[in-house]
Length: 247
Image 1 (tube, one colour):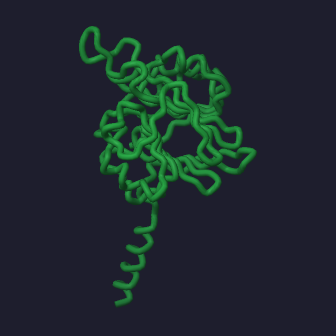
Image 2 (image 1 turned 90 degrees about the vertical axis):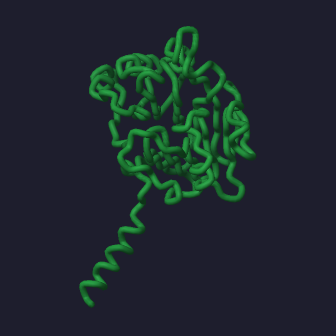
Image 3 (image 1 turned 180 degrees about the vertical axis):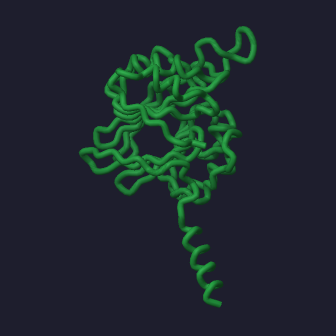
């Protein structure tokens, strides 16, 4: 009986361990308090500050051995959707992170898939509580499924710059190293993709990151890309490259 009680207690303990985090939370101090960022998987992450939660692209990729449980993540005050592809927009998992009053920010192309979504176009800015959210371009320059076609056309999806307490967080979405990325200013924390054929290889990603020079950069949405190439490409640039387990 004593052994059974121990097993039950252990099961209860394991049940409350956050199953959604691929890596531990990262904390950043700001003038308005601490911002906590938790990787989930692939392009999905949680941003928390001031008692509010932002969920980014709550969707499952085909790369992880174990799919994240979006029923276990904190319910969102704001959801940011970058694109219509299924590894960014998954209506079933989006429903799991919503609650009464959740604001879901979407690009216009996602309007038919997200009930009650708030459309933001590239270049628009919106204030939600203590957050400032800017929709910025994300698109392919040259890569596509066939000649004359691109995987992501300009204007279809959104990257986002999220500001809280002066901290500026760049969520690149599915993009190559476009001019708008390279021209970004005063980015503190950046999440940059690198996966072929849909975005760009690690060397190109490193070159683009050097151009806008964030203080901290996390490769995400990287699948089986060689992150050492990205890390080596930024060696000596004065940028804090943080490799984390997203899968």
